[in-house]
Length: 357
Image (cartoon, rainbow, N blue to C red; front, side):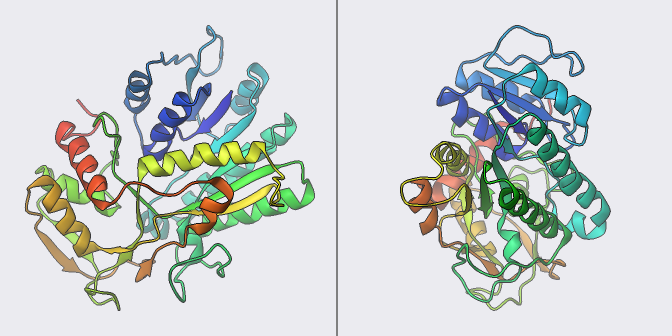
């Protein structure tokens, strides 16, 4: 059984599909603070399995390959009850707040939820001897990189509390591994997830005003929002707008399956230790205006936009050198910008209000 924290979220729900298709049994723990249980119900439908959702304090139900418990990773008694009831062989840790702008405005909330919650999870894992972990980190740990593409050995720094929380958790896990090499840990630094499952049944559905580019573009295209604000038109880039490495969420989800499989083999014949730090990106950067044009082509819709002031904490450009991921995981991104935009539009046009009825 694999424990998935934050599994009802955008990336987590797509990862559940890929894991179920590989024959894994999953238990998802999520507090639904920025997600919907509908995502898992649809993931179950896509995967042809039943989703069992018991009362979190009792955890008594028939054996199932796909289980959901509503709860918070900071709730250690609840975590212990899950580990007591199930033989958890590994954890994929997605749970965390993720909006850069919000983190600048409410840093204490981010440190409490992301860092304190992670520590609680790791402590309970250690109590029960579960020492295999895939952690959802972020390219924000590179701060404002001196050059691109970004390799895993680049200096680490952060420009906002969200990135700082991810870097703190990485540092904690490096110390945990140093203190006890029995741990097998993958730190997956991913870049900018976009797209949706090709079925159009699950995708990105942020609460309130989107903080990320693609859901905002798609909401403008479907008529939910009037126009797109492009934050910053004076960067030293190809067209003066920010450049990012956009990766299809399905490629990203497959990367987690590969990481889980790699941790089972640690240390591997190539001599890689039980702590893997890996970029998950395409190795190609696209500007905001390039993404707008690609989405207009995919959707047939005009995307009105206005260039406004930069957001605090944003950097000019950020894209990956992802060659190490292929070396240690046998993984590389396969879906391009056209597929990203087409799948995003299919999801948004089929679900103009997201998971809300």
